[in-house]
Image (cartoon, rainbow, N blue to C red):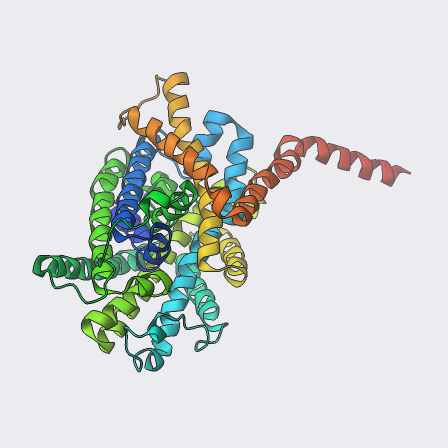
Length: 477
């Protein structure tokens, strides 16, 4: 009997919810601090947010050509395998399965845990004056160190269970929580517009003084780390390509989702950051792990702080749901190609979902949550991700040269992938200066894929034959 296959159930509206839902999440509510700390001035920080958004948009447009040209599940694994061969494709799959997807999902869940922890301990945070020095301090001395991670793992298990039980349930949760997170981002953004239009900045806000402070002393490494934090906030722009094989009409819907969805996210992010910087002290923005909660408390009072924290927690939950949905597809496709044990590439006969792939992803993500922190994971994850974003977009140029006859329902301007590759090369080299440990660890995981490929793919049959010969010889002696 033929094994069940994933069905085409993803509409344009579902795709828009998946991309916007994956992008608007923990980054908007956790990345402003690292970016402002690296750039020093709010003006420079906003430029980083804009450049990050445009880079995500250009990458997504390149992926739209790849996705409509090769409309099948697997994303980069498909493009890299066809353009550069089995080794590069396997390296992507290995890093994605072991590091990239679990790392991304772990970051989202950690932010979820941070916000929910502050909801639980809200009494402490609202008893102290917001603009006092005490408000700038992190809550490590108040919140038990295990609580955010315990909550993070709990959220991970719940979204994994939802997506393991039903594809429709995962999509429904995504659609509903996308509305919540977009409304949260819009409320923050509209508040920023109101503040700017009235000119009523709060005292000691981040816009006081030179908005481009220390721009001439900022190093290339600091720009790279700031871009990593900004690009992390936009991460998810490539998620639709992982499920293009499940889209009802990928040739038309995939480019439309990108062209409508990502500019909407860019505008929301810029306005939201204006609101943060106009309302809060720069020290608060730089050092808090929960900037949206601090913003809500400052503008709307204690109840507003709790309400914003709840909305952010739901947003992170929605982003985690989207990441589980797409990440499991990489494991599923990798197993179908023989790069992983075959049971990871089977659908549950009861739920029609890649259940074992979801379980593997949950285990790896739990390890990341237990071992990592937000900023360390962002730097570690981002370098791994951008190495393969660069190679995937480079594959588009390879296809243009080697396979010009391929049908391309959507075709991006040639300058777009060229500029993207140049910036991606910068992002893959500069972090070694500012974050050498995380960068070396990331490269180590990429290189580790080579010997595994030799054993699992290149010489798999030969090794199996040698082993079978030894077993046979042993039996006969």
